[in-house]
Length: 218
Image (cartoon, rainbow, N blue to C red; front, side, top):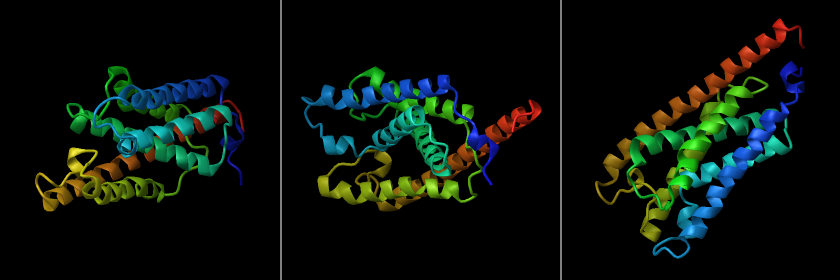
């Protein structure tokens, strides 16, 4: 049976908000390689090997699709949940571990957009327009597949190109055992973030359904 919320169109103001957020994130993603093209050591392959960049690319796509097309499918809700999780991870990891680390971003505004502003905007969007159907209990685990695959990719690619995107993925300093312990801690933290994103979505969905019911809307 189709959920009543699934038949409700997203408010125009929120769709405009999504398009603006997408354009802001896209501007930062495009500007960084342009700005860094003549910087020694800059690599486009390395640029697209940052979790921050890949997560922001997904966030931009989700914002654009949500703003322009406004799909109301369960699949899109799951993709939104994944994008929100990755952007929350991006914001928290940057604030806790990377705020003083060189991540190849030359301008303060692009750094702020990718690490602070877009993560906040996508959480706001998730709260204002939560999933129209309840996600399965396995959704947070599914959302973690990409971060785990990304970690494996970085560890395999690192010794090949002699470059690692983040210090906590670089075994050259302390070796693989401390690295493995640190990564286990991060995976647990990421799971808690995914669970929190899912729970916030559930609470927001319940609140919206309650408001609609109190107004006699179905």
